Image 1 (cartoon, helix red, strand yellow):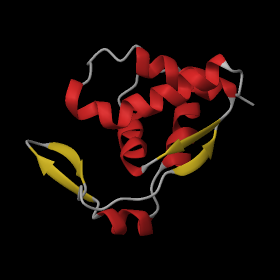
Image 2 (cartoon, helix red, strand yellow):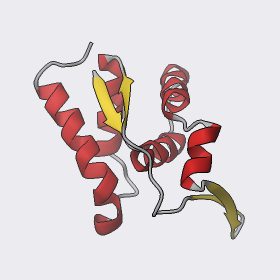
Image 3 (cartoon, helix red, strand yellow):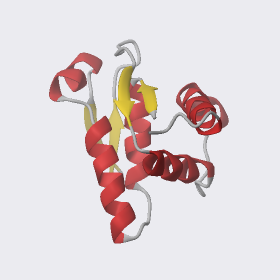
Amino acid sequence: MILWLDHTQRLNLHALIGAQRATVDDMRMYWRVQDTIDLSNEEREIIGYQVREQNGQRQIAWESTRGLAPKEFEFTSDEIQKLHNMIRTWQSGYMIGADRIWLEPLLGQLENGASHGAAK
């Protein structure tokens, strides 16, 4: 299945994956997905990507006025299923306003593709 992800979706999905607990096999699959969606150094420079330390925690930031066009990524049906399940069952929850901008379009793609059997 093809997903079109912008930089905000890629960064947030990457962080969400990094917070998962998983079996070794699932962990390796998640790592492959993270490697696939990770921003290149050039893309990071374009959006003003920064890593900051705050209260001993690593936080990612970028300039909201800068953007990258959505990019196409292809995933297997197993990867799509695991990503969709991970998002739908995320225990920490989301911030209703802040996460809607990246999460709703992603869920729309996942649900549309899953319901139409578009996964490879």
